[in-house]
Image (cartoon, rainbow, N blue to C red; front, side, top):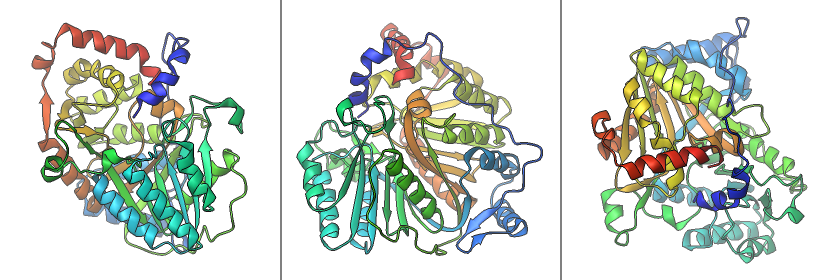
Length: 458
């Protein structure tokens, strides 16, 4: 799925910098930083109320000072509020995610806002298009943002049929410079995946709209697929509660910045409702920011880790700061484990990331490669209580060039679910051992060197 953009950027890459830039400033909290205050359904909680919520989360989970050490940094970096009163449902793979999304679409009464990188004109794409058209004809306003590169192979009449039904369609950063609305920015892509229904329910994660996600990664699902066709392993979240308003702001901001024109008036910000007990922060990153907000907060969280850093990621081509953060965590006794792909749809990124295995393994980081599937998930769990799921890969493209979207969920209740998911993936993975890795073949080493040359543009 990444090769579409790689081909377009081939000529641009020939002018790449000889040295890679610093991605982000070193995350640190100001000594005079104010206390972290949470947002709830009835507005901003007091300092005392906020502290009580955070103390509950700390008391319910394993012993760690990550909240104390990290949250003020995150607050200063991100700007979006930490919200309480949310319900978060962890969704694994396409079938479960699509089922939940279709149910939410069917229940829509006011509006549907959808943002996606890829939307293909296949069975899954047509099913979504038909569901959205049906709701539009019922009087529900549907607004759709799709990335121009991500939908490069999708026929124009696929989107025109939705537009003819009244759906508002916005192509993000059109490839054709004639169609550009805010300057031609070929290298800036919208990699976010977001669905918001009636301002009350939201979905985000790594799953695009495509047939490749139609089968899950379980053994039963894999047996049902055609011979030789690998399942895609991905992770999404279904969210309800005050955090949905923050996701809505990000969608509407993207629409406005892309000069999408006025949207029909709808109740985009209904009164927030308490849906659960989860504490969640929405984080959107953009190349227009001074640095990737998601990336800097991840660096801070890793730097604050005391017991464990568990990362599952599809595209791993780390910059020096991330490498240093992982090595430093392992060096102070933190259990650092990475689950990465064993097979991929982007061999350049795959081999660029593998070029760092030797260094990471020597530092004490443990690396596992997920077998039998195309790993497309992007998630992390730190100290069992700080978790993130979203669209952000651990590569230069996500850090510098893409619009990305993640949610951070605090507490051991959700952390236990993430731990179970990680353990399940770990059982389906093979560990890469240093002694074995040092014996890899010359052709693999050459591919790694070639991948590193291109990593900034991938």
